[in-house]
Length: 118
Length: 116
Image (tube, rainbow over all chains, first blue to last red; front, side, top):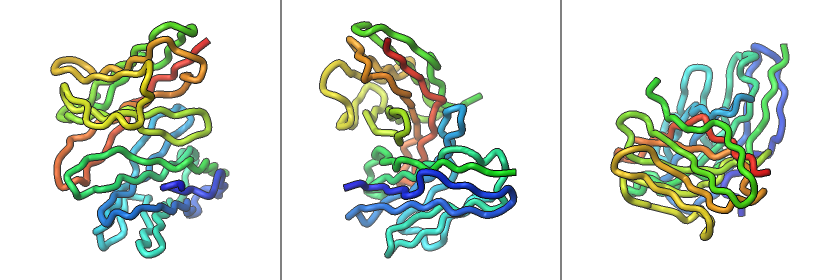
């Protein structure tokens, strides 16, 4: 079974509008971390935001926020006031056993391609 | 620039040759991860190393692939006798490895390997 599911292969958003990119995850661990990365057409992977499973507040970083719904096992990324430079692939990732002393690998979803229209 | 460095950025090899990919972690980072990205796919974990130690190689193919992170110098991912299916982007990430583990992995620009 897939551990990270991103159901939207592609999304379009009008410049200056907000957009939500979906991510659901599957784990039996109690402690885990959720990450979002951006991959522009140039290919590098850029860290955007992190949410720990024990964090009570939703994470925010500038125009990025993470809508964390633990019971539903979802960690959607919200980008406010979209800009043309936001056009890229966006990957949701999870690290299990996040607080257990094991700095483990990230498990990635297949990504969502976001296109921002002028 | 104190980011994760990878070289070469692009590498072309013929079938049967060896590919060596290098990764220098961010300053102050002692943990290195290698991932592979096939076209239109997310990244897949290969191996996790600390200095002179392989911590987790569960994602690494059993044959032809090896990785090291020596006491001095960059981490090396080595692919022997490359085949066309090895064509992919290979990313290195590094982290500080501090606890509790809100440890973020920062990625290098990747090496695009093309096998002819």
